[in-house]
Length: 121
Image (cartoon, rainbow, N blue to C red):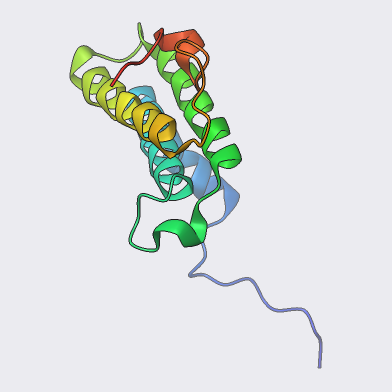
């Protein structure tokens, strides 16, 4: 008997996945990545039901910074319809970061603020 498992017909192969992603518009990919970054940042900021259990401000800073960079870089590529709620979410995360910090960053120095400008409460 061999230890190798036969290929499953239930698991899509690389070609199938590549074909599937080829059908997805770029705007949808950008928005999906942005929403994933927002969700991960919210968890790391302790904004979920588990709260403090997953709170990690260093990780949250990185995620918020990446989200701000993505939104800044894609601003001309995605419509206002998509960009406005993402920018609102980013600002909420930036404010939550400032509130969660024991020693808040100076205005303009917080995560993502080099892309968005200073965020005030």
